[in-house]
Amino acid sequence: AVHGEKIMTEEYQKALCMSELAVRHSTFAGAHFYDLDSGKVNSSFIFVVQGGAKLFSLRKTLSVQAGELFYIPDGLPYSLQWTGAPDIEYYSLHALSKRYDSAMQTNENALQKIPALSNAGTLALFRKIFSLMASGGRAEKIRAVSLYYSFYADALPLLETERPPELSPALRKALDVLQQTYRENKSVEEIAAACYISASRLFHLFQTRLDTTPVAYRNELRVRRAAELLRTDASLEEICAETGFSSVTYFREIFKSRTGMTPSEYRRKIYNQS
Image (cartoon, rainbow, N blue to C red; front, side, top):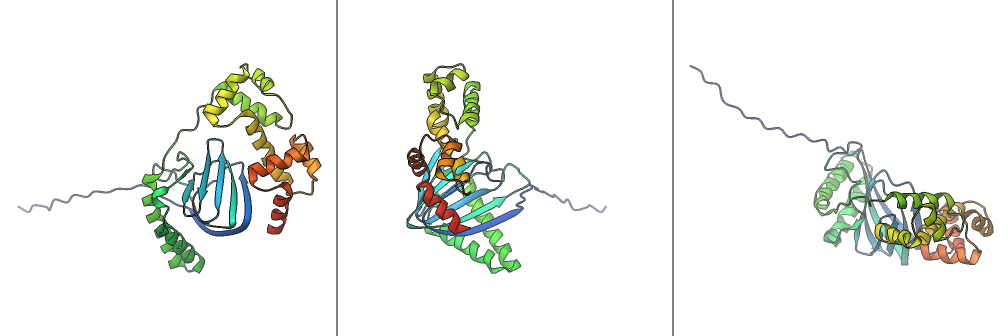
C-alpha cells in the first residue's frame, strides 16, 4: 500500500492595510498656533527636536519639550501651541488606514507622550524615514514604509488607551448651550439653569469630566473662532463683536494666554506663511 505524506498547513491572515504615510520636517521661529476643530483623519507621532508645545483637547492638556515623542490619535479635535527657544523643529509621522482592525485602529488610544521612545534612536529613525521618502525613489519609499511598520510595532504596546469621558445629559446640554451662545456673556448660573442643575453642580461636572471650567471652555470656543477671523481683514474690534469678548484688551489677554501670541502677532505670522 502507498501511504500519502501527512501535510499540516497553518495560515494566519490579518488585514493590516496602511493607505497613506506622510512624514514631515517642520521648522518655525518664535511661536506657532495650530487649531484642528474637526479632528484629523490620521494618527500622528511627533518628535520634538527644538522648542516645546502645549496641546489642548476636550479630554486633557499635554505639555511636551525638546527630546520627547508624543502621539495624537485620529479623530481628536485639538489645538496646539508651539513655543520656540527661539526656534521650533520637529519631525512628524502621519499614518492613515482605511481598514481599521484591532491592531491599526487608533481612535481609542489616548493623547500621550511616549517616554520609552523619547531618545536619540527614535530621532535618527524619523530622520531616516524622512530622507528615504524625500528621495523620490520607489524602492526608498518602500524601505521608509518598512521602517515605519517596525517603529509602529515597537510603539503599539506602549500606547495607552482611554475611554471617551462619560458625559451626563446635563453636561452634554451645557456643552450645547455654550456652543450655541459662546458669543453671549451668559453667567454660569444661567447656563446651569438651562440644564436644570445648580451652578456648583455644573462646575463639578466640568472639572471632574473635562478638567476645565464653563468659562474656560467658552473662552476656548471664542479663541478658536477668533483665530479663523484673524485670517481675514476683520478688525480687532469686529472680531471682539463677533466672538463676544467685552474689549480688545481682554481679547488680547485671553488670546495670548491660549496661543502664546497676541492677535496681531498671530495675524502677521499667518500672512507671512501665505
